[in-house]
Length: 144
Image (tube, rainbow, N blue to C red; front, side, top):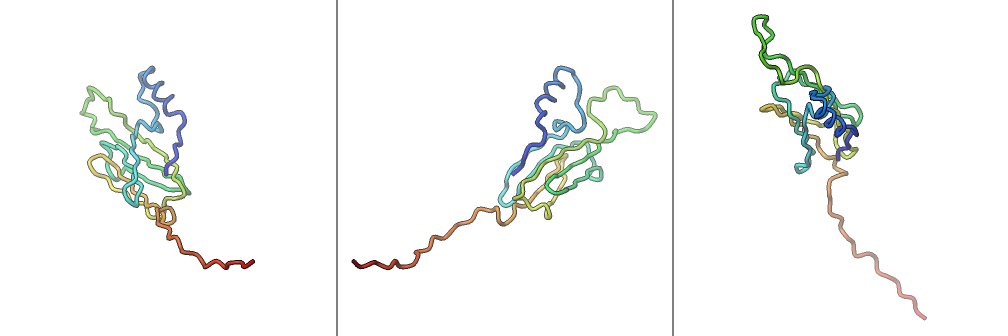
């Protein structure tokens, strides 16, 4: 149902491992995702710990779903001195190409415990259905 859009994902992971960097914000590892089918819905679960719901933006254009989120500093006060800052901050995004069998008009999203859950219904024509086999018409017999 989904198509991968980032052929360089593994290269990015290797580069991060050897360079010791946290990667770019468009890197999928900045927003890990699970995708699975749950009944008549296709579900995307994206990890966004420390992001407020107001800082999440979801858009669909044609069959491209884009999730953008901003993780802001916890303390923006001048009196606070950071001793260690390992969590990435800023705006980052993730794009997912959706198949034509998904209903992009009826997407729902919920955010709970740092996980954004996007539910995309499967269109009626793509759902499994049973085909009834008819008995057919009687055959005319040819006489010799």
